[in-house]
Length: 235
Image (cartoon, rainbow, N blue to C red):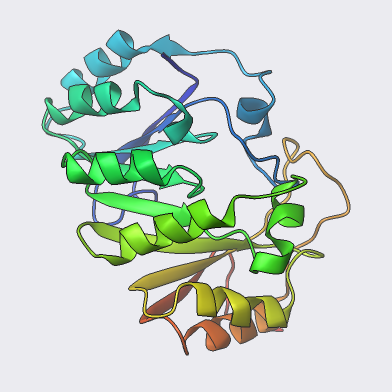
């Protein structure tokens, strides 16, 4: 396994932790609004191997207390558990970002006590899931299994949706709410365009639209927040 990116410190990616973020390559989705598409399409080059990462983490003991693993889709890697074991042996808590299409891996990581926090993307309402994911079809059974695994509450977790026009509308959040009814926390992430985003003609919802989406989700989820936009900036 190779490491394709390393953010050496973050206060945002792992709640209540001073963490670094590790990027792995490969993904089974092709979301048109992806910020890390170079990890998806294979054009990114590795920046280090696992031993170099563990050496970095050993030197940061006492400064960092968490490692967030993202991608791409980390659960595509069969040796992901070995990577996490190496990180855990150094005393770090581990957070996993996942698209929810690999419930068996998710279950294994939780059951073996390897991760303490998981963030799962909910791409859209079931009817628009494949389109929003840039695929012809999607295994929604896997998505629902992963939702159920996290909602058992064995670890801390969050669900999150990147809200982007033209893919998301008000009614979609009603259906998303039905998917994760009773969940602990949910974040709406506002789309931000970047050079690495593979598809043009995308835009962010307005603060007023984001607030309306959040109000809908508050009827289904215990804690709802909006990320990536100044909600005091007007309509």
